[in-house]
Length: 235
Ligand code: B12
Image (cartoon, rainbow, N blue to C red; front, top):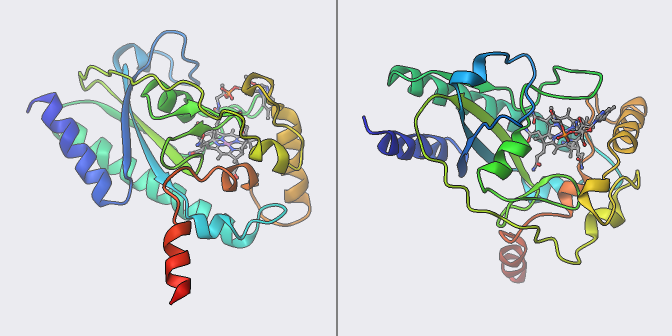
């Protein structure tokens, strides 16, 4: 089967299962990976998929993470992982190799790293830009998009649409961040202050994982359900 046709089929499978966004990236030499020594010599492509978190759920996040967001976050991760598993299976059935990388798994605890950075891959795949909040900002879904990647040897020419920084003067994430970790320039993002805040939230017993959600909530993207609900409210 032609790689382009297979890619289209995979996009359909992911879409049918609830992941509307897919992109392809090439893992170049400067990409940092953990515990994948030798693997990326042959698996040089990554398919990146995205699931947009619910705006309504995010809107319940007021001054830090709550149980509703935590559950939603976990279900989003399960869905991402399940679809990545299915995509990996489809690729192997067609004679390619594939490694689904967990949506949210920390491998290197010291500097808080996964096997690969889904965000970096999504940026390489042209899905969006690195925003002021240090997250991938997708033109339609903003930072609500949670990500997963499947590494593969499927020979596809990734032709990334280059997405330049389009946050403009928006400083909603900077204003809402309880840790003061977000600065004007994304390069100045303070990882450690962010992480300390998440640890504090966990200490307070809000959730059992390091999450927050505030900088995601204020970056919902253009695909805004707000207008629709206003019409519904009117009757
Ligand atoms: C570990 C992790 C975290 C850690 C640290 C993040 C980090 N390293 O940057 C903590 C717990 C703090 C965290 C916080 C959050 N995360 Co997180 N996280 C991850 C995870 C599992 C791995 C990240 C990774 O490997 N990065 C690679 C390295 C190289 O990251 P880097 O930013 O490029 O490099 C920096 C760090 O290593 C840092 N650093 C160096 N030393 C140290 C030491 C410490 C203590 C820390 C904290 C950092 C640090 O310096 C490097 C250069 O700047 C990914 C999933 C994945 N596999 O991609 C999700 C992921 C990045 N997280 C995500 C999200 C949404 C969040 C939160 C909003 C939490 C939440 N869900 O409510 C916050 C947002 C923080 C922010 N605004 O950036 C999403 C981002 C989606 C998007 N649209 O961009 C991802 C992709 C998960 C997913 N499946 O969608 N996260």
